[in-house]
Length: 336
Image (cartoon, rainbow, N blue to C red; front, side):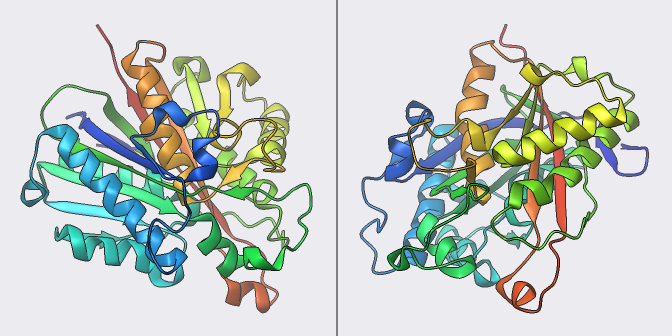
């Protein structure tokens, strides 16, 4: 199953049996509103804090995925997931409601594919029959922790990105019909010395390139094998930086083949500056929009590379640079 130094090839090809995606009011006005299962008109979700609303997002996404698969929550062996808030409390508290065995993950915005890779590993090695995995973020909760509360109204530079309010989960199974997880390449921490928390895309781009190039090398694939190579939330800045690195390294990735979830979810006239971000960004776009396109036969093979900046408010206050990581998962589906 291990191919090369850090790539797993899943011979059992775990199936994404169903998904659940939930978004907030900003996402409801975005480009991909039709691909969400549930959309809320209020950031509070009838809760008395943004963090509690964040928890509800994940609870609803889990419930939706289980319902769509025709299962009961007691049949789920494990949930793997995480978020950006202190000690991943929204995810842990949501799992208090879910009640399944739980493995909490922190990979920042790379958590969606970290969870999918590990969930597929569990299924592939017969460690489980049903695994839920996902990630979530809430704009107001994340902004309050990492930058400024929204009430402050602080001006942001053009390199900043808009945190997605949303949760996306996938239900993996050892049997059934649906998109299949065929391989995964685990990222390594890359730190280029950047310190600006308002330029996450630029900081994460080298990690995305490292993982993509390693995946192609260890699987002995040309980039053209994939219909799409999808990054999590590099945004305008990070996508351009990564394309320049690919060109410098001689990696033949075409611009029209290389897309970013952070540039897909919102409309051009929404004030998102360099694009979208957040652990819920890649989770909602992949488990909603992109898998829907797969099921329609528009995409047969895609490599999803979720990127994460592994900083904290404490590390920023101590003048640390920003270590970054990216995890890649290949998903394949024949709609016929």
